[in-house]
Amino acid sequence: MFLSFCMVSVFVPQSILADDVLESGDLLTDGEEIGDGAVTELAEELVKRTEEEVQKVQEEKAAAEEAARKAEEERVAKRQEIVDYALQFEGNPYVYGGTSLTNGADCSGFVMSVFANFGYELPRVASSQYIASQKKDISEIETGDLVFYGNSPEGIYHVALYIGDGKIIHASTAATGIKISDYDYEQPYGIGTYVE
Image (cartoon, rainbow, N blue to C red; front, side, top):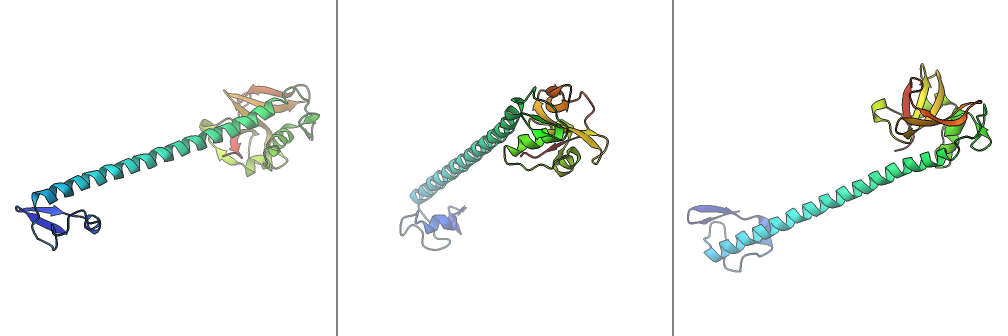
């Protein structure tokens, strides 16, 4: 609705009129003139409502950002929790076909058992673990990701858990057991993850 006053058109939102911002008798029909006081009151109300709406938007944005920050902290913390759990088994034996974190495990049995402690069900062998994982580019590697070694998806022969700072923990060989190595001690074939 537009109101004419001194040859100037003033737009009044229907929501403003519906809330009876103007005093009864100030404005009754389209085009009816209104006094300076009503225009001032209308302008002040519009400014007030705009400020309230801006404040509301800012508060909602701040709340969303805080929620996103907390969610990211929880995501990273969960990954670190998995790594911290795995690290306590450093030095334990490598056993081909084994899945025991204390008595001995092979590479895929090691990561399978570590993740099982957090409710994840990984396939038993490394190649199947790679195929079932969510693939990532090496540039996106994060703590808690799995590093796979081989020459094809079906040709994966080793898997390790990335622990950050370019390092992995893995059930390496019978001679070295579960140990920490550089993730690129051998050229990785791919990166996979089971964690958000």
